[in-house]
Length: 391
Ligand code: FAD
Image 1: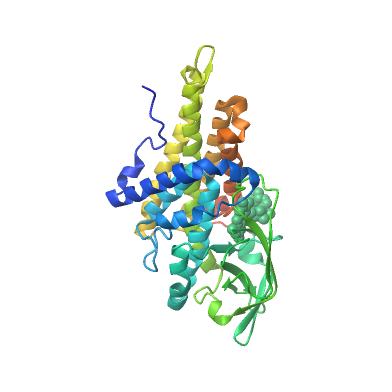
Image 2: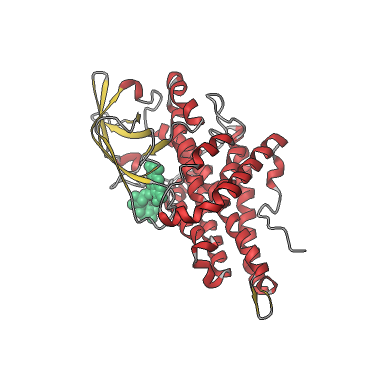
């Protein structure tokens, strides 16, 4: 009998209870049944399949790990495994979900006051209103903590925002745009929820991406954009509050890197058992088995790392440097693993219809967004040496 096509070699999903495993099965049915058949076509066309949004609501994956406000609830570990399952089939769909329920709704969950959470979160958890998260700028990427150029100033009960935000996932259609800006005079970082119809708010789609092509990234321009005071996130008072959101979502990106590797490994394993050269399946050659076992080692090592990180998150003791180490390490391993999968498929590895090309491209974006490997390395480096290498 052929070996089972299975990227959870150490059965890490077995640590979940039956109800949690049922959610993961629903996610797998969704990714296999809905996402897999359409994704290459949409990826090729650089378009977002809007019909998947209500299906995400149906399987209740809005706000896994959040408590209340119509969120799915459950543990952070479960949130991670959902992220992994989504990315196992497609990292763009995982990113759409991560930006919406993680970065955007997460900013409101962590930095909004009670009234703001009641106002925005339930419809976001039902995927009726979609969110984006605007932190990065055209001239300020890694250095947003100290160098953000987008400004805000208060005029009575209204805030005036000026600046640009680049790379903002979902921004071309999002209803709830979380925008981070520096207050003129005080230099304090504040967060705002900006609607797509706010005066002074406009978005241009970023075209010609070679990775995560299904994610619709926008360049947001804020020109004397007027935001009422009740739409300012009441508990966001400095970049430390922004960093709380990033700590949570970087963990999710590390899980994406695990899922992406699982998907690539499973495609490669299937191919190795089917592709015949020199009269036998290529999976019977020692060098091909070496590629498969290297991939499986990376998948399993990163799963084990993330399992423990999820436990730290659930115990409430996960720190920035824990999340940063995982984000940097898992995305490095992801690049390596998808490269091996590409190698195993030979020339067929670069054809979109064989999936691996998409994984290879997407691994590049995951590697750089939510803090590049260098930036996450410096966060860990500062923690372990007590010496900051940041200027
Ligand atoms: P830069 O900061 O210009 O860095 C260029 C290079 O210099 C990198 O290799 C970097 O590691 C290195 N570097 C910089 N500073 C140092 C240093 N001190 N020491 C050593 N090396 C250094 N942002 C959002 O706000 N919202 C989103 O939804 C969003 N989605 C994204 C989706 C995609 C597909 C991509 C590609 C990006 C997205 N981003 C988003 C932006 C992303 O977070 C940034 O691209 C990332 O933080 C890096 O910034 P940068 O691209 O401007 O690179």
